[in-house]
Length: 177
Image 1 (tube, rainbow, N blue to C red):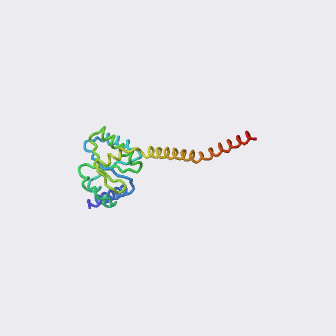
Image 2: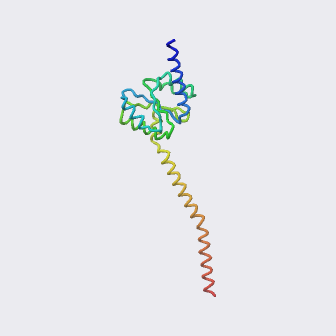
């Protein structure tokens, strides 16, 4: 009888992890061996609202990933594993994890999943090298504004040229009489 509550707890944990895998934009797997509880708290705080950071048993996390339809992560579920479930800007979360890993070498990024595709640790690092969503949107808006300004000037040029031509013709006609 003592086994039933444990199994229920495990089933609940798998269901929660499965839901987090499904609802997250990305998930990054890390190894946290050697980090103190205080450092883990600091990591969770540094991720803010971008991501939740959860320590999970490998067997439960592996089952949850399979239940969520995610494949290709089985090799990453070795050693002490923690999962960063990203619900906000993936680039910002990847940068936060990378910066924390630089300051705390015990945090090792193993790999992850982004939009259903598995990623290696190198690919997560490349993701962290991208500019944030806000910066990219600002650049896009600036480029669009510049192109619209050029287009407006281009469309306005023939009109102003025609207006100058008409004014010159009127001036010439007045001079002639």
